[in-house]
Image (cartoon, rainbow, N blue to C red; front, top):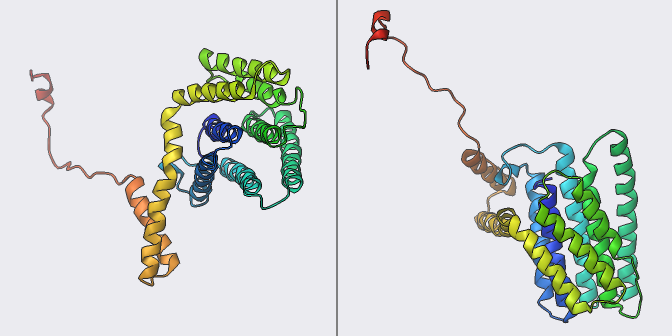
Length: 287
């Protein structure tokens, strides 16, 4: 992926947690989280497609990493659109959640089949896909609980968080504090499912835990947040060139060349003059 897989997961969780908290209090500002997430996902798709990944990573992405980042960005863009459509009441809730369930079913089937194949090949690339599948399942279930409070979902919200925790434990770059955060998060879900926690206390606790994890990865999360503003500058440049009636292909080529001139180092070798003689006896003299 364009970013480290857990950075991507944490960024998505960060926006979804604030969206759920805003949904709980019926705040219209909750859609700001979805808009910010959608803009960042669009930028990830654009950067991956145009091979501009050295803006955030000083190495070339493999083809599989590039397309996995694009595919997951598309999935979460679809989830954001579904939530916005439901919030604006453009469709019946049954239709909205039917589409969400269909999307989730397709994702689980595809990821489950691919993960089994990768595991048989002794690979570890399935970790990121399990993370993001669980995040998708978690956000859809939590939103359904808030949107349809009469429906009871017992012990089902623990499953995705428990899976994320188990997969995260198998990774080498997890700290003890983060591990404690995931276990606390699992306990909060258990208490919430058995009705020992009120919804406000539960969602505020989840937001605080995610914010704690975000502080550990603050630079990468901030970079993901400000990437849409960089793309906005590029979009303004393209619009100005269009006003001047320059061809779009020529404008994109200019952006590509400016990017290469700025990011690609000059690997040309410096020519050193070698037309001088040395006296071997002078090597023993004091400097």
